[in-house]
Length: 500
Image (cartoon, rainbow, N blue to C red; front, side, top):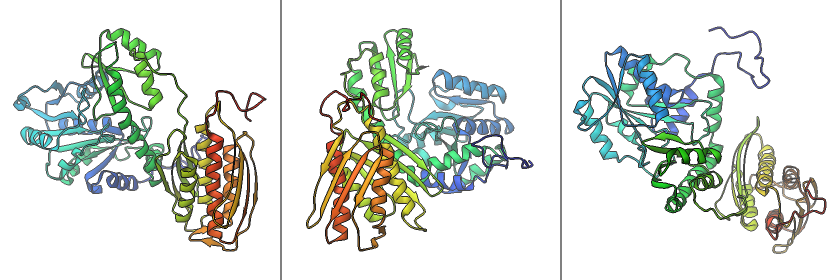
């Protein structure tokens, strides 16, 4: 393949004129994520591409059939299409499994469909031994939210076990189609010849590398915690669903229902913007955030208490100098997790959230080999953007906040979340640094927050100890934000009828 002598006719297409980059860095990152060696992993265009690679192997090696467990209609159609393309027969496995004569592989889901229960490691190993030499192909596309042990562990001892992974659901990359095929080194070596030389395009590789960057880890953890919390809530709520005869909400990030009237329930779910797939004489659908799941419950006839929209904001900010993930939740004081690479700055942001009474999760990969300027500036911009998003329509918000001191230091911070950015910082520091934190960035940090949040912020600090002075500024900011963001009514805090 020749590289094009022309630049891509796409404003966002820098670098697309060349062949895709090496997959090795992505392969190593995914191997690290899944706790295996890189030689056990093949990067694929999602789990469906991995399945096709396996079917190519079956066809060449003279196998006749692929066995599966019952699956939802869309997946059944996809597997049937692949089997037809490679001249294989697709069959549903029955017990006992000695009927797998002529089969090259047996495909199962972990967590299982439709009940969403994660497979037990011993049970899966027993199954792998029972069907040997046929491959036991375990699709773990939806496993990463499960509080259970991945069956990847079996690839270290069972040569006929293959595990499929996908970044589509948890990492939000369905459109990029990135996943992995994981097996023993010997098995993988035999599969590489069935994969095309350049399996992923450049945009997909870039998207996956960005999603798997260390700065995104907190966002991934937050999504996992969110789903697990929502599973428990939906289990209780669906007990009251008049339209549901039976349901399963277990380890997987989905809910299965058997409704009294399937067509009616599917129509209702569609009205509420929920896509439900036909499966197992019922419907299966993905879980999401509270607002998404409330729509599922409402469509199924569960009474939902009207309340304020969640005051939560999430921002991903990538530049040439920094990669940042910031999550603000004004409705809860925890968790507070800060990782910027600058210890004292981490402590300051922790103080803001703790004294502000809100959850802040922020992670940054910055160019600290140069200095801390870009990291501090961009983190405050991302924090401000996430906070602005969390404030939503600002109806009922107090809007104004002001606070004072610490020890021998006096720090005055007043804030007006008006939608208009303006910052005044009056204070000076004798020390150039506190740890790795440059004190000259303190005023700059407040100006960056003011700009991103759209707020007027005035800071005045006096005292003898520079550590106390900087800390007093950030603590006072937290207290001022606690006051300004609190809900104290149901009116917009502006006589103009808008905040801008």
